[in-house]
Structure formats: C-alpha cells, structure tokens
Image: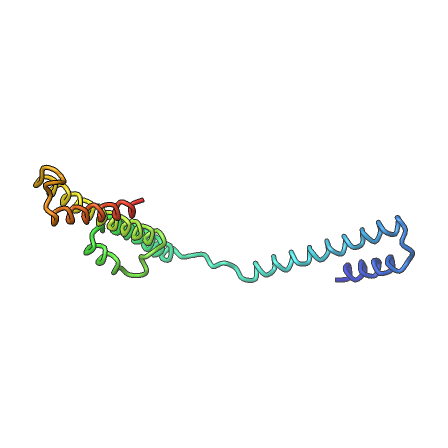
Length: 167
C-alpha cells in the first residue's frame, strides 16, 4: 500500500511541474507504474480468493456414482436409437430424467425424423400403388372411367405433395 501511495505522490508532483519532453516521459512512466502496481494487486486478490475456497476432491464413491450415471446415459442413447416405432419411442421417453442428456435428446430427435420419413415413404408408396393399380385396369387414359381418372389424379397430387416434403 505504501508503494502505491508513494507512486501517486510522485505522479502528482510530476503533473504540477512544467511539462516538457522529459517530464512527459517521467509522468508516463509513473502512470505505467501505477497501473502495474494495481494489476499486481488485483492478481494477488484473485490468487487469495481462489485459495480461500479450495475445490473439494470427489470421493471414490462419488466418482463411481458419476461413472454409473454416465454409463446409464450412454445406454439410454442406445435404447433411444433402437426405438423407431411410435409405441417403442413413447415407452423409451419415460426414462428417469437423471439418464436424459443432450446426446439422448439428439438421438430422440433423429428417431423422430426417421419415423416421419418412414411415414412419408409409406404415403408415397400408397399413392404409387393406387396409380399403378389404376393404370393396370385400363389400357390408356381414354378408356379410364372418370372415377379412376380422379382417383389417379388425387394419388398423383398426393405423391407430389409428399415428394416436396422430402426435399
């Protein structure tokens, strides 16, 4: 503390005299010294604070518990990855929140995308099946009954809609 008070006095004395090139560089030197003293003081406080609150090391039992929790979270990701039906996905999401993690959520999101994609593919297949069956019943568009033409057009429209969703 005395060091900083002494440096402040020297800085004030320098500021009160005529400022020439020599006084200017001396003033600058005193200001840098003040900044350095303050910086060192702040660093010392940080060191003292960090040592004042030491980190308590984990016990073997706590480490084993944490290891078991992480192992179960990893297992939950594997179970989620295999749950790609509506029924299994619903059951899988009923796990304890302790075993849910960001990775588990990412896997669940991927499974949801897979199920939605599969549903879209099934709709596309159904639409294509209707078009194929309708085409097989008739030799050409001119011989299509109006009902079948409408059915085929609807199926084709549905097919286009489903295809646009996949893009």
